[in-house]
Length: 267
Image 1: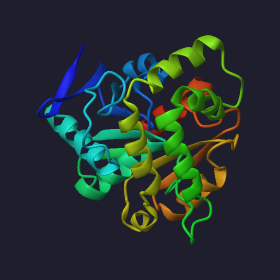
Image 2: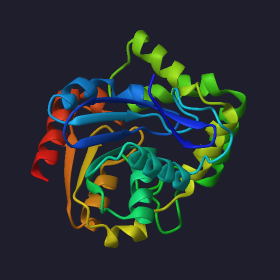
Image 3: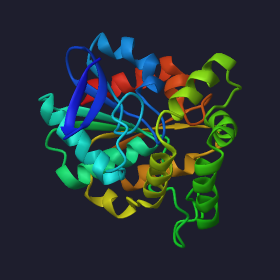
Image 4: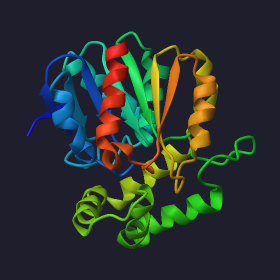
């Protein structure tokens, strides 16, 4: 199994197939690279598809420190440097979008060819001047306590909310397995940090070509979030997936893969 060391005793698991433009898939909070399994074969035909597990997630080291979005972005930067990747396309789903934006904020886009943002808000928190956010403070407290005391029960209710249609038992089982690989302490720590980050003020400075991918079903993230970002990112295009919720890459993989591939070819 391939790993890259990003600091002493912190190794990130990844899959790396194909040749061409590196397309780096960055998963959401508690998730893993396995959620992008329907992208590997397609993108490896014409590009270099790289699926990464962030620290603490998936098959990566279960360390108990460094679990902030900014630090995940630094890990991604170290990973890109260690693999000597050039002109990378960052595909950030959910929290992975925050990681991509934080990467641009800290390191710029000199080595980033484009970004693909999948179903995320500028901030998950309901700030006074941003009521579109997903969580208010009482909800955040409740979620963090559920993660600590009733994680499997909570995820049993949460995972189906990511999809428009009902999951098969087989799919639900592997998703539950993936999302419970990280320790509860890590799960609640990164939930807090990824909820309170806010990238609204950064958008004016982002020139990187961006494809925004949003699911029409609004169980978690509203389409209005995609429209909000599209209006503020100068070099962006918005694609709505009519039969998806939070995971168009799993729910409509053919349409998603083509949309992302066409975007990369246009860069």
